[in-house]
Structure formats: C-alpha cells, structure tokens
Length: 168
Image 1 (cartoon, one colour):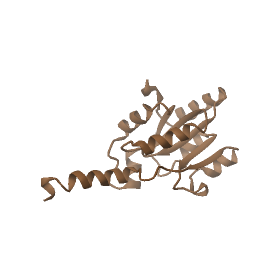
Image 2: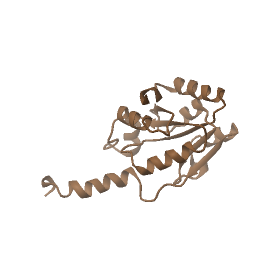
Image 3: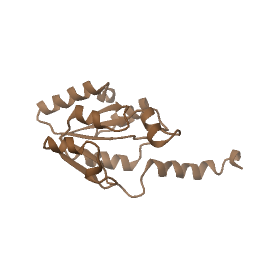
C-alpha cells in the first residue's frame, strides 16, 4: 500500500497535487532528508499534515544529502527512506529530488501550504515567495527540543563506537 504513495518524478508529483486540488483538497508540502526517522520527524510530519488535507514529502536524494550533510550521510539510502516515510499514516505521497534546494519540486507541486522546521524564519524558507504569491501559506513549525538525526548519530557514536575494541 505505501509503495503507491511513492511518486516517480516531478511530473507525477505535479499530477498528484493537481488531482488533489480537483477534489478540493488543500496540499501541504514539506521537505528534508528524513534519515534515521525519530519522534521529532513524526511530530513534525503530523503537525504539517494537520495544516491541510493531504501531505506530500519531498526527500533529498542520496547525492544531495552528501552535498548538504557530508560524506557519511545519508545513513539510509533513498529507497529505504522513501519506503519508511511513505509508510507513515500522516503522509499521503512522497517524491525524491536531486537539487540542493526544493525550489523546483515546490514549483511543480504548487502547494497550498509549505512547511519547514522551526529553525527557519519564513523569509529563509526556499519557495516562500512562490507559495505566498499564489495565495498560499508558509509555516515554520517549532521542533521538539533535543530531537535531531545528527544528535542521534552522535549519541550512537558515543555509546557504541567509543566503547568498541577497535577504538581502544
């Protein structure tokens, strides 16, 4: 079932969004890496979904993640991240993008609501001008404190790598 939520490209994402609007559904879009899913991701996605009728997630592909986060990321490859995110009840569709910013996918989907995590000011959110010009809303939702993939990776390294026989 969740496999059907994975859209193959920008054209499919645009067609999906248009079909939703034809049914009078408001389309919410958020984007990110979503590597090593944790409760901060789930909280953010649930709150994003509550801002409209359907939620589409744009996931950075593996190459764009490496450019943005460094050579050790992502931990999980794109196909696994797509399936994990698509498997969440609050997510209606997911699509990958390869650029360093989601500007092209935002313009293809033309969401009614664009959401990012609270560490961004509205004017810093890529695509905000496009969405606002169309009469949409742009939101920066507060993040759960202490919940981040980078922090999770650091805790794993502290607990398991520093105690391993190879590190001594």
